Length: 258
Image (tube, rainbow, N blue to C red; front, side, top):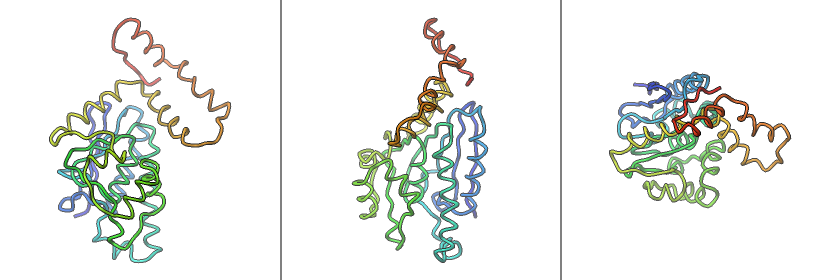
């Protein structure tokens, strides 16, 4: 049975569910294609304020579906074509204008970890497991996925994760900055819902600007006049007027994303 991706909506929060029954949601080609289509639709949906990615059952994803390797990655040329598909989907997640949150339970390793790292925030349970043990398969992590890892943890932890190839627990993952927070087993749903609500309660335009600005802050090139001017465009929005009026009136703001 091929892997699937379903999208569920709860108001302004969309949940993307990864599901590959019997394989702990390991990624196969149909699942990559379905995730690409889901992210294309959600990225263009201005009504969505938070996107949650999670796996079905007690797993996020252990990585690639190895049963595909012989048919889909039997040569460097095949592997490169497959890698281009994976990278395009992960960059869709990374570059999505809407905030993204990975809800992690159980194994989150290999390319599954790369997908989680493409998200803006990551919350996991105490029993979650992490790592990139691809050297045990005789393969390397490709540069596009490796950069997702490097950008989050830096050189020392990236080298440790890749060279040792071990699978480790949630506390070490937090120490390495792979996750933002760890919650008790059974508490993931409540924490994810609370996190999504905090994001959704903020001005959606501000969230989109912050995503873009944090990405730009990683670029050492000097800011242009246009980039500096963009920092103050928020003061011309309806959300700005609603925000400060709500503060003065001691009420909760209702942002319209305009």
